[in-house]
Image 1 (cartoon, rainbow, N blue to C red):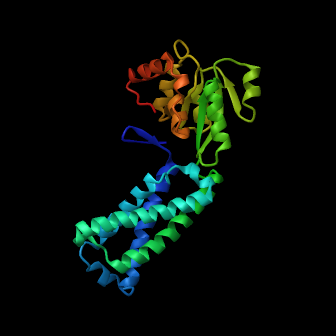
Image 2 (image 1 turned 180 degrees about the horizontal axis):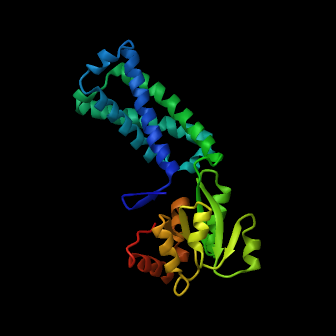
Image 3 (image 1 turned 90 degrees about the vertical axis):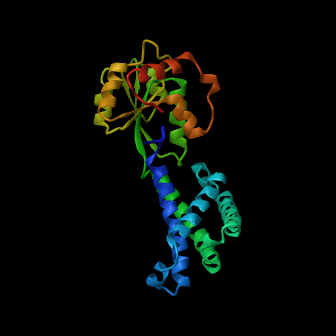
Length: 274
């Protein structure tokens, strides 16, 4: 994951948003290109044409955001996806009409605007269908290690295993002690015991994220081993925050002093965690 503005974002999410922004910009540019009879020189002479296209791009992505179209779970329902896309295009049209009325100088051109709406709908539908195809094949997945065998660990593994829209792959689980029940619970996942070699396991499995999902952290959180992981460039992630991020649900029932201890312990070492 990548950390921006004190928040963590998966690589696939950034690719999705940036890629869609470029497609929207390209759709409007293509419409302008057609209107100006395929003449790039004539197009480049138009006043601040590039900024006008950027305004359409930003407005469209804001509309998509407020219609929850950057919540990737919606990709499983194509009817809902299509309806929300059409609704977003409609909202974009209304917002831009208001902006153009208040500031006529930023209007990109009536025919460019109408033609770009057709291209936008086609590009957005095609992009999302292609993206969800890649997501289902886990082509953008990030490998993670789960530290702990708690109920929270089981919930995280279940979410990752059953949801195609999550671009994560559980490489292995590290339990504090060797336990046959743990192996039975997490079938299909490589289970290690003991926290002594966390860094070596992460390096051997080429993992860049470790999710902490311990029942109790006081006296059990392996700070020295996690520090070694941090030095090697591995992200240390709070399991409760990670679960809330991928599900959108607040885990009120799991709030306990351990979470505060986790953050305090890591912040004392100058670490930033999700």
